[in-house]
Image 1 (spheres, rainbow, N blue to C red):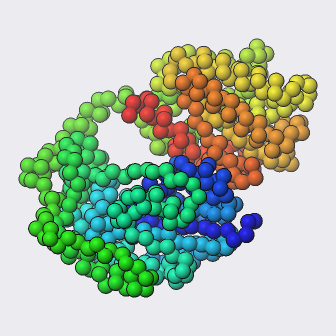
Image 2: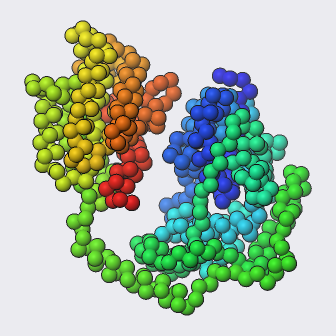
Image 3: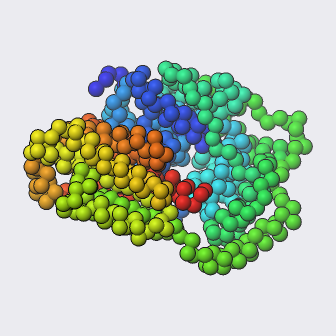
Length: 553
């Protein structure tokens, strides 16, 4: 392990450009890796907050760091690493921060906590606006903390005070990690490096690559925000809230609080801010509210006509639902063709999340690309695929998931027993796959999912598949490298022919060029991926492009 390794833990806070920082670092990660730096992430947007649980079963704020978050830290190997999760700012329990410290210092010699703080009235206004993104109460931390009351700023309660009392918050992190290991910055756009949060973050940490500027998180317009808070406050269902938000006119105006409202709210935190500046030798929020603008009014109140429109839209939702009942046949049909791994699309985890899609799965166990055009094929996979396509010409999309039997066994078997060159055997499998895809693209839009990585490390486990595959002597490393090569070739072919290729290799490959342990089936006799973990990958990476195509959204 490298000596003097450094970890930067960016804890937010919310609404201070955290998403921009995360996306920038994710886009820059190849450049970072070349400099012996790494941005640690495992989610599509790079946000570690997806690995932080923030509420209990009753919807109350209850923060816990998941093992997956800790694994990102423990499995890293670069000299300098960064992990970012604004939900860490929600923590009020020393024991949780101590657990994070233990994991961090087990792999790193130096650990720094990086935080951007924003003046309390500004963050409260922005964070409550974010709460208007939800369809039902307590979906997001902003909804739990800021609430949905009829005011631009939240009602002061314990959650709000815990969140915005910065001195107490920083003392918590200081007690655990040490005052000298806190990097506290003010989020005030005019004071940031080049007036940009990404530039400021890179300079603060002395990150040795040029920053990629990213702007995200546009705010909810005033009328949609006020309507959302009104409907949630009055216990309308999430379906009604979504319907109204989709149909109400966007006035393009941001919610504002009056100067007096902002001042009154900010006064609750002056003492905390003073203590913070004194203890940590800071000069935060020196640019206080402009009292010359004392007559500035808030705009969170809509007119009576606006509220009438909201109610009418809520009433119209009933008619909308009646229309939907007449159009239940509008469900989309997706045909999935593949070997036994394609059965993942029959999983309850996928079906429960895709009720508007009929997954028609044609799964042929043992189907190989190498023998696809062999008239003496035992599985008769090609005939079954063609007949299934012919019976489902109305399909809105075709999904292919093939190749695991080839790269995991058949190609090696042919090389070992038929004296066929590995590369020639690979070319045959690739050629047959290309022919199958080209013959299908006229039927419906085609999607290809990368071939699963091998899960059988040795052949000592007495499963039927392992016994059969023990006939070949290829190592695990050889098999996984061939799988990655095969996927890269098919990915390039799909790009050339306008076929959507869904690459799951990066999120499936773990340390030491092996499949991630989380994808291994708990049943050691089953060589298929863990059903829930694989379903999560399908839902996160495969479903969005398929849904975009078939629903044209």
